[in-house]
Length: 460
Ligand SMILES: [Zn+2]
Picture 1 (spheres, rainbow, N blue to C red):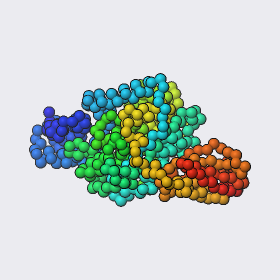
Picture 2 (tube, rainbow, N blue to C red):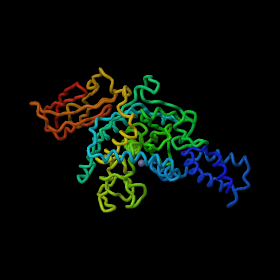
Picture 3 (tube, helix red, strand yellow):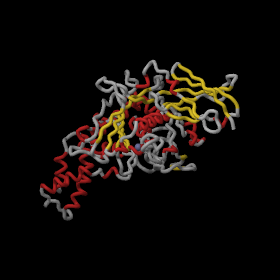
Picture 4 (cartoon, protein in one colour):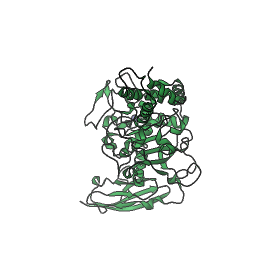
């Protein structure tokens, strides 16, 4: 046994997760030591070199990170592979979910509202993203988890019937764990580059701990903790699966360039879909192609077609693998943001079962959502832009709380001209004026128990 292994055995602190990390670190340690030692001989290493190696290793990004754009599942698989206790706990959770889903009649669901705290941990000013960018991300979450993605038109007719409403909405937390008012956004400067990928000497993830340059998690039983920071190495995001632990690192980590739809968001991950994908993992979903490439590996969800491998880009034509069309519109694929618009009914049921069985205190907590405040007439925030219309007309509310509204277009006698639809604000949404003949119409907005009606003039 070389010195390298002994050094990391000493580093391990005995917990099951540390054992798993230790295993990961052994690889990088071995690699580093090979750079420092004659082939197959580590015995010359003396203390100064050892400590230098430790420091170098601490600064390194683990090798398993490379080549992955989402780390959630590879991290899960690594943990399950090396620690029987972690595996047992995780499998027990999955069994609870499967048993729950096997009931002949599932209980009726109500909308689940999940309070979110965003920890913005920045090393450079451009990583200190704006509140508006956070709100742009929340708007995407609220649309996409209700089956109302703005890009839903991209989904081919073959798959349209698979678009499901998860009945899950998100809000900024308005009360912190101590009961104090909050905006749901915590900002902290760090001197650790790529902190989203870094581990400490004692194998903790730095981003989750203030003393390690990150920010301490809020009680993950009651808040969805989303960290926005620099990851790098082409990694866009990562999430903790339910029942995996440890509790003080149970959240979602996002690269600031794949977050929201404005500001630092960069194509092709500039439509806010990476966080939708990661919350899918956080609520128990696997990648659509399963644990590994090929047709033998499956995601465990009945109504997603078997798929051989991840998709890249945004395919313009149908693809077939494993005997069926690929559902590359599914959020749990790797397609470009522009292409992602589907959670299937069974994926939705699985996520809802996870919320019920494994994250039971997360949704619908008391007074933790800014948008549940009473006494606000949300419709007053909405403006109709571009009217009278010579082109596009937009509904817009930018500097508002988070809320949803129903939009209805009526002709002058009061007839509905198309089915009403929901939108989530803050945000900006085009009206389908191109489908209307020139003339006068009414746009009716409903939010809560309030209504507002705009007159819409369409010209050509
Ligand atoms: Zn993923």
